[in-house]
Length: 417
Image (cartoon, rainbow, N blue to C red; front, side, top):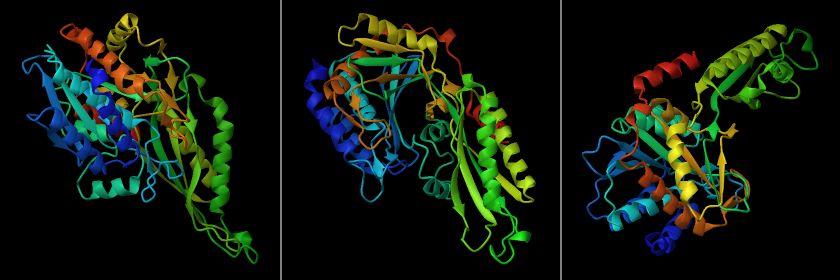
């Protein structure tokens, strides 16, 4: 009954966040809204704050040797054409993070008001900046020493937020529309790099003396052609995605261009293939510049690691689904080429991300919004409570793993190099 009783207030909070979206590391209003609610529910709450807008609070048995992290993401996407985008910042909640926050609040409230005595310890971690965007702003934060990572979870990893946690659970909206109420498990995600190639040539008058020029735009065109022709050499099982775009240039119709920058994401299913494909792109850029007597400068920036969901932890979710009378469909073992910084956290510890339906429009699209709030804010949190009950005191620690932040940085450096 508690989930039904708190439904209206939880829904109101979700809608307030939806209509007031904020970009990563700027979620000050969202943070205040969430903190005010948590303090009202639990006046004795203790909160650990981190990385500008992130915060963590813990419930359950303080002496437990099993500590679960339940993660909600605070930020919005940059989507200025979305129907409810912020007119000044272009932020829009068309990835569903606003519902994550509300679901976490519903679950927290249930644990406080129901008097549930958990054997496990659980921390609710509200993380900023999951979306990989607004990079100029984040570059300045890095230069000022405010952060070290573009993504909120790697930043939290660096700050030790997850040091005492052994496994983590996240939830996420499923893209697409569903006739039946649906949850999803074991949906793995791609990892990605961000590549920038700056082609340099020699500028001359395009009419008077094109003969001594070295056309940087032609080099970039040749590069795009090489990428297109090279696609047949890419392993389809790796779900490779590249999307080269012109980022900046000095082009004029009467001057042969001598400088143009092409940028692209590079997404693959595995880290090793990410490295291999990055080398192929670099070779294509170098060859295109050399063929037209120019130069190219290459910049590689790490995005997020691939995410392989922990199959052992997912068994608890499947068991809860098998006993649920409210959720009709279970999706299992899919892969999509989207990415998230949950992949980085999953390198350190076992993680799962449970998907949930209830939306219309295209995820990250201009018309994305929830259409089944009862499922999202009442039924699904009740389902998550059942998952936690099945995990409580029953997790086999021998099936968990742990790596350090230092090992994570070593891996990232090896990829970028």
